[in-house]
Length: 484
Image (tube, rainbow, N blue to C red; front, side, top):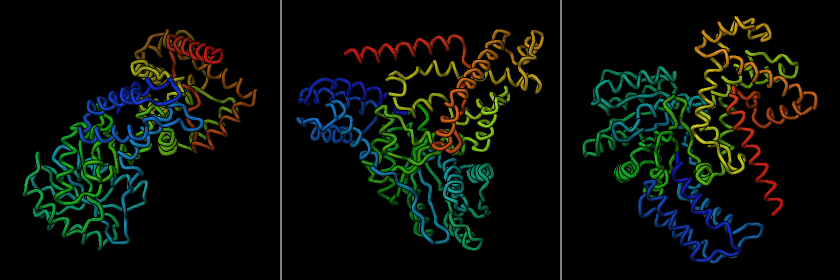
């Protein structure tokens, strides 16, 4: 998300790298490009205009702050304004001692309300130690309640089922059900329409009056841009939403809804959907999104991903095997499996700051190529016998031929993987002898609470050459800077 916007804003700010003071001409030129970038990202005209004007007022004619170059000063101003534009601090769901706390999920049909209801229920159960129940008051769309029931079963939360076809009665009875059985949270998946109409709004107003929800979350499809913003504004005017869930933020959305919706409704974005899986939902952090847009990375989110998705016990076992020089192809395969839990390589790279790559991030097509090779490497290892995975040295020509046929690869690719595995073992041995392995594992285990994968997965000879070439360019660039 925000890829196009990020590139254009960084390019606009790049023109300010030279000079001791920010001139009006420099600022005008950069802000003109930023305004165009925002409009192309489907940010509303008024929001883009006001945003640019605030930056202008803060940036024009200022002496550079101590230790900051003009470029860095403007980046800080833009960063602060982006954070403020998207809501400032992160906004969480508010809970009281009331039983149950009711959360209404509202929005137009097709925006992802039902799936989001299941995702929020799972998030509350896993991250907030809540005990939620889900219920659907959508009696109009065919199989709407059956769909939520399936979602509830998938995320393992109770679904309140009834034969009633009256939305208000369903909501009232669901609240009573939670009170009787002690469930502390009730998520109500309300009906939607293809467009806003009076009947829908009256129904939502009645449910709100009956259940007295602590949160009313509007689900907006990020792909629809300003249409989502206008719908959120109308829902807020009629029933008073308390927050927004933006879905499909992992798709090709331009980001306009995320940058506009807080300014228009004055209500925060509380969650963003970042995938189809039920755990693919994240709390919305304006500061972290601003960092991503400006190429600063998002290390905190990466750390959280590692902590929640990687198996700490398994990582500890892997470390112990590495220390004892017992790292097998089974372990090599497990490292790839752990790495894949973090998501695509593009997603991981986006969370790292550009300085990590010397200002040159790997291309998306190169990352996709590596991911494809990792899958082939996994297929090769999976085609080996247990004995072969435990002792790779017994793999002779006939075994390689069988493994290649079983994995749908070539003998050359099998040889390539075994060479890469041998290099990994050699690297580990050198690190162990130097004492570096112990230092690194202690640091990773301490900081990430389980560690990152320690063996970088399958890498082709072409990619090895690319990596070497990339490293040489970085060294040459650093030497050139020192000379200057």
